Image 1 (cartoon, helix red, strand yellow):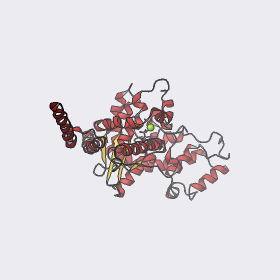
Image 2 (tube, protein in one colour; image 1 turned 60 degrees about the horizontal axis):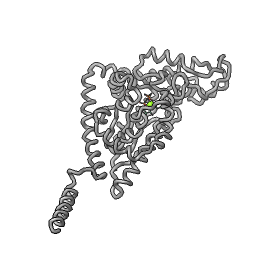
Image 3 (cartoon, helix red, strand yellow; image 1 turned 90 degrees about the vertical axis):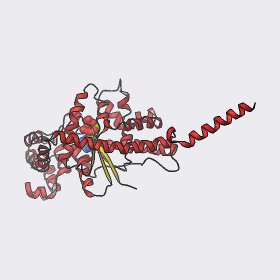
Length: 372
Ligand code: ATP
Ligand code: MG
């Protein structure tokens, strides 16, 4: 079996460090590992429209931002196919057929959809497109027969939904030789990276909540955001014992710090455990910890920022990359759609046996009628 990756992001804003640790960093590693036959990275504009219909221009403007973030983080169009969801019309066809395999109550039980409905105040009137986006996500994953989907933890219910659709499709339409491939989610191992909190300490860093450190932020913006980050409200004096739980600065250190960082920027401690021990005992101030985090973040983000500046010089070329990627993705989607329609037996014009059998049936009827 081929090893194929699909993943993507909604163009609702620039990408942030939550995307980076949750999925983007891993994608670049997987891309460069050489272990994958194909890697598809999708800018999910059609999905973003499902809850941004009052502001389609936001989605349109952010396609290029996400593409620039991809390239500056190290995704390489020579190795990965970067494409725009709305340009692959086969995806909507697949979605339509998959809808027959899912019940409304199953969608209502999806915990991610539930919490996103709440977040967007959609309780009273949910757009049908938004409500059914887990089904369209199944089309995104299956069109290229992806078996690996690197995502943050919030996406696990979506992958579960896709698995169910694949299972049902194969069972109903292709029991002898399965057409669709069941995907596996690849969630970061480190707890902190699964769902990175926002700088305000809120549950999840999210473009829609405005609590983000963006990959494209300037060095000054990053520093200002870090220095005003949420820590421990009970840690008023340096000498007070500090708490780690819900302390966003330490969560970010969990996601980014390694022992070499201590050597370079904070040699008082050998590693994060030692720093945490001092903090919880009392005697370590938030400012020192924040400055350390800032050094690490600047080191991580500077090369990304510099690459971005270079890519920003030739915007038409970025659209060209996306166009080529979309054309390549579309060819693959057309092939899968043909297989799906064949399995569903709605490929009438390719089915010579059907045409022959119907023709025989009518000839037979005609003969019988004639002989009466
Ligand atoms: P929106 O608010 O528009 O939904 P978002 O910030 O949640 O935007 P998405 O485009 O929905 O971003 O998510 C893209 C990918 O990044 C998904 O795999 C998701 O799991 C991952 N991701 C998003 N936010 C985080 C986070 N804070 N921590 C870890 N992974 C994240
Ligand atoms: Mg999201």
